[in-house]
Length: 260
Image (tube, rainbow, N blue to C red; front, side):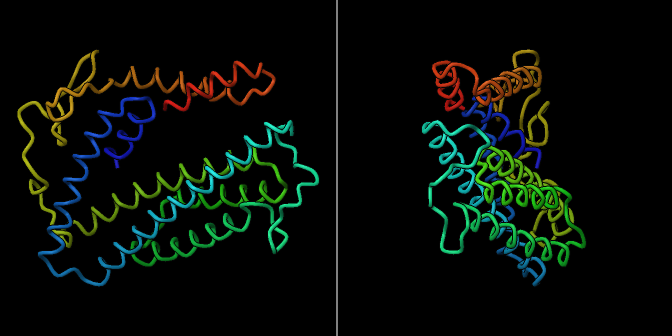
């Protein structure tokens, strides 16, 4: 989970090369899990856990797609002069069931998440609280979509997506702890042993200039630099949502954000 979260953070602040290297390290670890699984005889519980994680991955991808669609509709409404947070009048684009665009899809995703949560409880005997938070965020998104409030819908879907990602990381961590033996994992079998002075992921500690990943010369921003980058990105996103700012300024901010 720590590698996934750190890679996502590096990508978000623009250190894409370092993030890619870290994801490559994670892939090697997952390959070792796969090889161990193929060599052993996994029980039905392990097979169910793998299917559950695959379904969760697909659901997260679909939530990302719905967020992208809602954000696109939101931008289109703004270009037509519809005030943020106000439903568009007279559009007449409700679905066959009288639903607003995206409402039915989001409701289906919420139902699918509920089924996955039941499966998690059955296999693991518990559910990470992030999934409950994701379910509530999805409910907020459905209500916002029903009222035609694309701004609130984008915010709710963003929360749902983040909670899904957090929950997936925690669920994978639990499965690794409980089923590591079934996956063929043993201490020291994840790949090459870290060199002297390296952490368990083969990274050498760095000072104020950052760390390096696997000695490949890829510079990783240190914690202070990443915190500053996050603050700058948060400030840009905040300003992008202030619609009283001049259109030229908001367009410039949008172009900056697209780089991340």
